[in-house]
Amino acid sequence: MPIGQERILAGRSYRTVANELREVSAVDQDEVVYHSVFPAAAGLMVRTPDKRLALARFAAEAQTEVERTLAKPGRATA
Image (tube, rainbow, N blue to C red):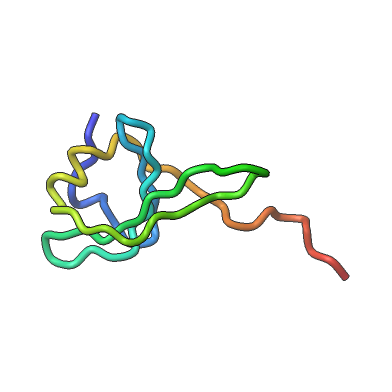
């Protein structure tokens, strides 16, 4: 089920029906600035250049909000 436009926020990630992971960097009036992220070799993640899409279309394509952690806890070195 699509996500409501009011729930699309900068700094959050969303997954589409096509399993594309999109990270939102800005919501500017009725437009979303985002980049796609996908897994690559050796556990690395690759991100695409920024893209722009109408907020209504972005919300219609987004199916779930995804919580992403960039660093693994407990990996600090002394």
